Image 1 (tube, rainbow, N blue to C red):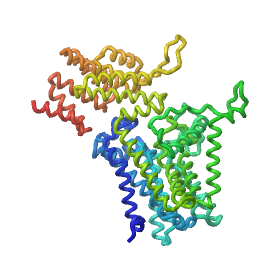
Image 2 (cartoon, rainbow, N blue to C red):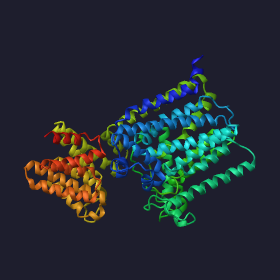
Image 3 (cartoon, rainbow, N blue to C red):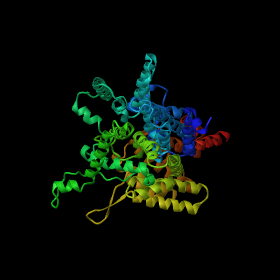
Image 4 (cartoon, helix red, strand yellow):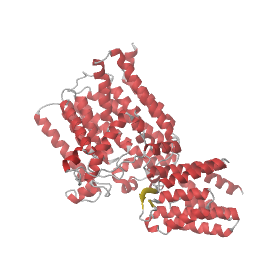
Length: 619
């Protein structure tokens, strides 16, 4: 049997996909928590107090219940050890790649194509999908499992629908149809961007199963019924009247700080950023500084409205998207895969990149599902179009080279994710105006300084702490000036907390306490969780002062402060640990043991607490 024939078998191609995912993501098991990983997983009492019932998760997350249920199950087995979460994310990515492979094998067997396209096409599409560096954020960034898991169910639903349409036997059709409905339900309760599934099914039907006008009308009616059913469920879940315009407004916005018009215009440019990143991901990073569009129709004293429009980036961005959609419509019958790839890309972006305002206007994980459209388009050009232009023997070399470049870029980018300081230093170079990026870089520099201090690298640790403070201050001060000439400040509780930690580690306790007391004086702006965090940091300073001065009064003040923090946030593990440390230092062994055991019941992998407990019990 020839090698090419062996490689064409579905088993070998599945093995190739498995190897591709392992090679590019196998080294990411130690990537730490980032951004929303803390609030959604590590600091989320719903997960670590979960009693095993579905409705505990449902009451908190509803339309994302399947995703958060997976996090709750992860916690049961791995607590806060990141490798377990990454293993599941990588496995989901592999399954999504296999779903893409299955979808494409179904598409090339539809009446519109009838196996006329190359047999290699499904594998190439799947490889582009799983190897592309733009997919990293939905896989390596743990909480964005919501995006990859939703995509898995979404793509698998489409694949099952095609099989249901192709199979001749009624019983087989019924099995595939039921599978389709089950997967669609799972998709819908994983992430809200999957509400477009009925339209995706309609798109498949109209593109790949051309037929009588009666079937065309019935398909449209079925899609409309599906969309209304989804809307009715959403409105009911959130106790809204599904026939109310007010309900539509409430449930179709994440942020009230940006108008629908401004968000739509911004997304016209964002979509081109996503497209450019797909074909050249060099400038890819986590947290973008992206300016909100002000509008196309606002004239000023120098320009009339027409001149304003013609000079607007948003206008030409919109024209560009319209041209792409016209190209897709033109190719609907001649080249169905090109049409489907383009239409699907815009459909999959339609929830997060249209008229539904979201606080962060751009994030790469939102491209995970839409990238399937560009992967189909790219693979079609590589496998079908290029061999018609150049020597067919060169095509495999070109395709293999592109896949190797993508795999290398993904591996290297994932390597950067393993080092938070390197990752955020790269981020601030790409988006120097993004304050949150400077804040997080400062936080990780401070954490690096703490590690260096434990290792006895005192000089290096001081450099890291000072660099951390500089980065944090970059996230505070803006370029605008106050009327008195002073710099304008924009301070978040997180930034203040990180600065406090830095000053504490530099033993500049007076400065740290000044920041704490200033923040606590505005506690109404802090919120419950941040209020507790400031109290914990205040207690930490008293604890350090007690150790350095051998003064019991400082210990008592620290104890009182930790207890105040626990009254505000009873689930705060840091407060529990630090209060146990105080009891241990003050000789209250039983109280300390009790507190340590409570912490270990929630996080058994905390080796420091386990060590403290062993020392106490051995005395």
